[in-house]
Length: 327
Image (cartoon, rainbow, N blue to C red):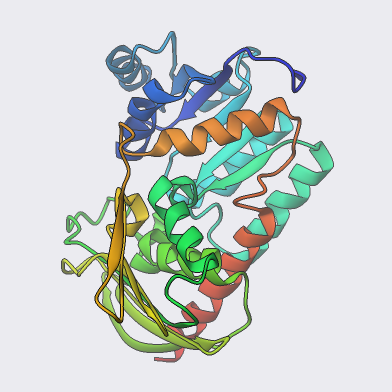
C-alpha cells in the first residue's frame, strides 16, 4: 500500500453503471487526488459505454474482473442495496479499499459481518454518506457548534419525490431492498447524528404508506437530548425537501440538504447570514478527496463517516422498521 507521503492520485474502480455511479464519475473531474481507472457492469457493452462517456481506461463485463485488476486501490460500489454487503466483502478480501453507497447493508447483522471482515483484512471501508463532506453541511455544523442559533430545540427534515412505478426497479422491488426508509430516510437520520452525535431514543412512526410490499412513505419522530426530531421520506410525492434546525436564538434552513449547495440562518432579532457553495459539480468529489487522503495515510476507516456511525444508522432503521411492522 502507498505511504502517506505518496502524492500519486488514488486509482478508483466503479462497480455499477447507474445514475449515482454516473454522478460520482462526473464529479471526479474535480478530485485532484483521485482518478477512475476502471468500471464494471454485468454486461461488457454497458461498461464500455459508461467508460467511453466518462473517459475511463478499462471496462469490465464482470465485477470480479475489476476486483482482479491490481491497479485498482479503492472500489466505489453503486449497485442495488441488497448487493452492497456481499460486494464490499469481496472487494475487501481482494485488499481493495471500499466506499459503498448507502445503505452499506440492509440490516444490522450484515453490517456487523462486513465490518468484521474489514477489521480482519485491515482494509479501509466507508459508507458513502457524501452529504457529510459537503461544504454547506459543514458550515451548518460550524454555525451550530458556535452557538449561532443557541440551544437546539428541533430538527426537521423531509426528502420526497415521485419515484417511477417500475416493479423491477430498485425503489419498489422488495428483492432489491426497495423502500423509502433505507433509500432516502437514512439521510434525515444521518443529519441528526451529524449534528447531535449518536444517541439513544425510541421512534414513533406517525404515518406509513406501503406500495407493492415496500414502505413508499414513512413519517417518524423522536425526542432526544431535549431536541424534537421530525422526519418524513416518500416515493409518492414531492416534499419540502429541506433541513430545518430550530434553536433558542433562531433557525437554520438547508434546501435539498442531502446534496446541499447552500444554507442560511435567521435569528430571532431579524438578522441572518447565508452560505453558498461555489465549488463545481454535484459534490461527490468532496467525499472522494477525503477518502483518498485517508487511504494515503493508511487509515482503515473515516473519521468523518465512521463505522460506528454506520452501525448506529442500521440500529435506528431497524427500530423504525420494527415500528412499521407493528403499524
